Image 1 (cartoon, rainbow, N blue to C red):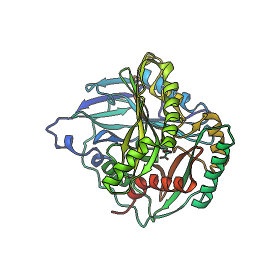
Image 2: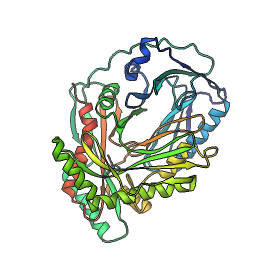
Image 3: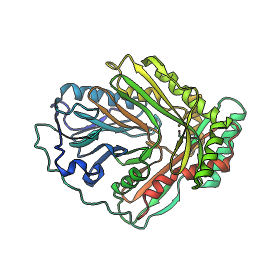
Image 4: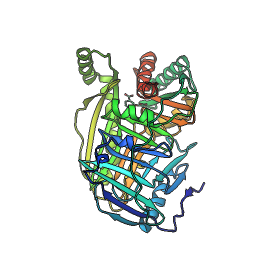
Length: 423
Ligand SMILES: C=C(O[C@@H]1C=C(C(=O)O)C=C[C@H]1O)C(=O)O
C-alpha cells in the first residue's frame, strides 16, 4: 500500500530555529508547561528535549516497507526544505517525530513534522517554526493546564491473567522443545475514562516520576521508555539494551540485595546476553569501531530494576544511512522479539493473542542529517479519546515461571497506570 501524506511535499517547507532569549522567563519554564492540548508531540528526558505541536507535514506507512517508505519521504522533504538554523544543536532545524508499528502486519506507522517545536539542551532553549512559507514566530505562553482523566477504570485487554499465564507456559514448553531460546510475550490493559483523556496529564507525571526514561508522545502513542534502541549524534551511535528484570519492593536495602541477585542470576544474564548480542550484531556493519561492555549494570527505576548495557560505536555510513534506517535494522531486537528473531516473531503472532500496534516499535525523532533518537516504545499506551490501551511484556526463557512473569508484567504497567490516576 502506498504511504498517505499530509502537506504538499512538492512545495518546500521553510524552517527557522532561533535561540530563546534567556531573559525571557519562559526560557526556564518546564517544556511541558508550554505544550497546548491540540496535536501535542513530546520527547523529554531529565527536563531536556522537545515539545511540539501542529502538523506541517505527515506521512503514514504500513507493512514491511514502513521504515523505508517513511525514510524516503523524509529524505525528499529535507532535500527541498529551506532551513535557517541559528541554534545548531541536535534537534534544532528541521525535525520529524515518529512511531512505528511493531509488526509488519497489521500496523500503522507515522512520521510527523510539527509546525512549532520548542527544544532545550544543555541550558539552551530554542524555538523552531515550520511551514509552507516564512511564518512569524508564535507568541509562546503557558498552555492551559492539563485536566486529570475523569473516573478512569481498568480492565483486562485481550487475555486475562490466567489465560496469559497459560500462553507463557505454552511458550516455555516450546522453548524446552527446541527451536527457540527466548520469546517476549506481552499483554494489554484497557483503561476507560468518562471523557477524552488529555495526554499531557500522563506525560507530566511520567516525566516527573521517570526522569531517567524517555517520555514521549507522538500521534496517540505515549509512554516513558527506559530503553534506547538507537541514538545517533554526529557520527557516534549508542544503544541502551535492557533485558532481565526484578520488581522493586519499596525498601531500599532490600532492593539493593535484589539488585545484587539480579546481577548474578544466570537466567537473567542469559536473557540479557541474547539481547546485547542481537543489537551488537545489527550495528556492527555500520560501525568502524564498537564498544560492547562485557558485563551489564543494574538500572534502577521506581517500579523495577533491569540489567542494562550501553553499546556504543563510531559509524562510517552516516551520510547514506539515517538513524531511522539503523532503528529499522535493529527492530525487533531480542528485548522485544526474541531469539532467533524470525521464529520468536512468528510465535508472538501465533500465541500472544493481540495486535501490539505500535507498542514495542521504535518511537523517536530525526533531524535533517538523519541523526536522532529512537527509543523502544515500552511502558507505553495508545490513547483514543476516552480509551487508553496499556501494554507490558516480558522475556520468556526456558526456566521462566508464568506467575512471576505475570507479576513482572503488572509492575511494567505501573508507570502509565499511575500516570493516569487523577491526582
Ligand atoms: C517488553 C518489555 O520490556 C522489555 C523486557 C524486559 C525483560 O523481560 O526483562 C526488560 C526490559 C525490556 O527490554 C516491556 O516493558 O513491555
